Length: 189
Image (cartoon, rainbow, N blue to C red; front, side, top):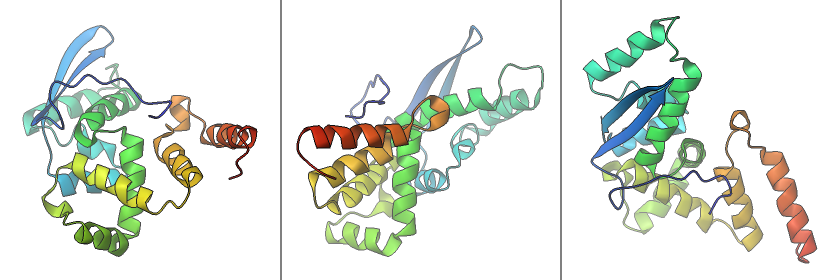
């Protein structure tokens, strides 16, 4: 489990058909409800790091228009940071993991498509018909399958799941701490 994993309460096992996120925006209680987007489309958004495509643009048009109107109003407390935070909450329910992890994994698979697809075909998995969460999980399994040593898997996990610096996470610090821990336990990396 990642040291930076966010706590998310699920009401279904696996991705729900409708993603529901409660939002508190300057003491204004709002609910975001989004039908689960098609897997390949959502995986493409993640690979391109296009969180605006997920939220607000994947919402039904009337809801998306509401959020875009608020974003366009300079007096509204809904700024880009708030929209990104909401998008990250929605993403965790769509991909089953934090946005940055889904982005890093899908981008890696997209950049190495034929290798990823060959891996998927060999296992009978077709990402064209899968949910975004299954695609993200398959990207993790494919990347992890390429790890030869435990240290490689630990490095992959840290590189994928360490949150972005703007959220207070420091990948270089985490990498250094892991290397120090390996040295203290007699392993080199």
